[in-house]
Image (cartoon, rainbow, N blue to C red):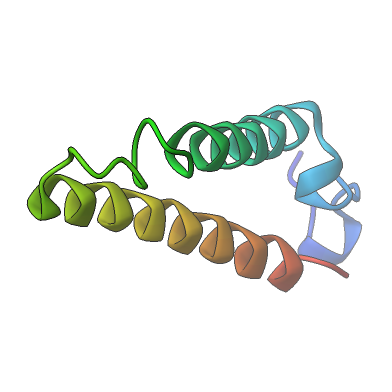
Length: 80
């Protein structure tokens, strides 16, 4: 027996499902921990680091921020 789209059970907002919650939590924790670990005097603000290493550190942080933004946009687009 197949259901028509209008008869399909409502699975709710994807972010409220256990997988969505775990993935969102993982993404947020990764972003916060990475920022805390990299934005200090032992990493990004270390005068002994060469400019090229600092560039790669910032590039990684920008990628992380972009992924968080994309995840947010995708999650908001699925709201009813």
